[in-house]
Amino acid sequence: MALQYLESQRDARPELAEWYSALADLYQRKLWHQLTAKLEQFVALAVVQAGDALIQLYNNFITDFETKINLLKLAHFAVVVSRQYSEKDAAINYLEGIIEKLHATRELRIEEPILYVKMQIAALNLEKGNQKECKKLIDEGKSTLDNMTDVDPSVHASYYWISSQYHKSQKEFAEFYKSALLYLAYTSVESLSASFKLDLSFDLSLSALLGDNIYNFGELLAHPIINSLIGTQVEWLYHILQAFNSGNLIRYQELCKIHNAALTAQPALVENERKLLEKINILCLMEIIFSRPSEDRTIPLSIITERTKLSIEDAEYLLMKALSVHLIEGIVDQVEGTVYVSWVQPRVLGIPQIKSLHDRLDSWVGKVRTALSTVEAETPDLLGHDI
Image (cartoon, rainbow, N blue to C red; front, top):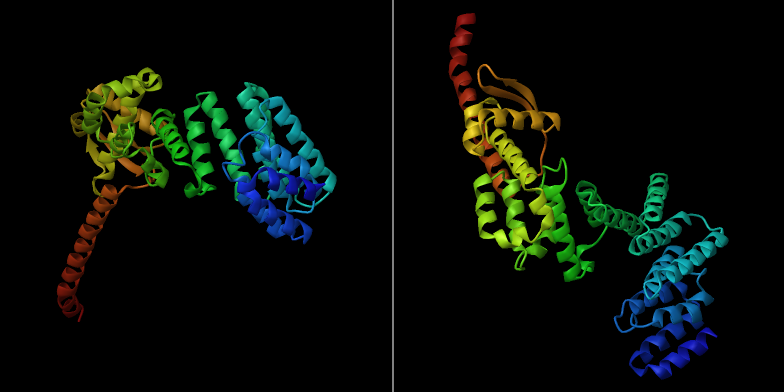
């Protein structure tokens, strides 16, 4: 039956004849690993992904040997096939049938392929609007992942992707940001389409700006996906991220004026205007602290008010906020009008910040050399005095 199907397709679709011949040859020789690799290339072809071609391929060919190939690869094929079903419920029923087959194999480590398939079911439920079922599957998936070792990156990626999309649907910006970055940690950026990268980098940038307790943009700015914004109509978002990362309030205000129309077209940014201003003021404060030498961490509030354009009372509130979210540790002296900072939360540094750190290290090395020269110059006198 499997060979008959391939022959019929070879005649019906002459442009794919070589592919069908290669699949038939590997199938007859029972070279399951090589057949799996060839199938991966085949199902990725755009021409094959049209209509119900993959559904027919699965039902008439892959079912004949599905338990003989790597079960995680089978799960990968099943998820690709499920996307060709026009009805979400039909796709879910198909995937649930795949899970039953995986259970029936009684193979070791079937948790991996089953979890991969379940995450696609979660995605389909989210598309249907069944957020409760989606959340249930995500929670079960996290529990399963926590109890597994040596998990394939594709399984991690599938979990973090659907998790990010669920949080996006709930407008949970910080949770989306964390899940999406973890998705990228398990995904090759080169494998993603240009449109997908642009959409994801846009969503990540917005969530970084709007997410609670996200004050470090260095990790996102260091990721190659963020370059997808450059040269597009939303490049302004890249520059705003840069302004936030460097705590450059004046630059942020300039960008808001230049790109006012684009900013007002984003309801989430308009609704959270005050929150954004508070966040960049906190990052401005962080930059003030970072730029000072470690031995000079007592900062007059007047310096903070000058840079942030805030009143003394608002500057004190800003410091309390930074202390409460554990960005800094220290003591505010309202009598003296100063703040002593004993600790600053570590950050992923950008190139300008690394250069600043380099300059400070050079200064420190200079001081050490001066101290060493002084000690060496005074050593004979010290020795003579002791004798």
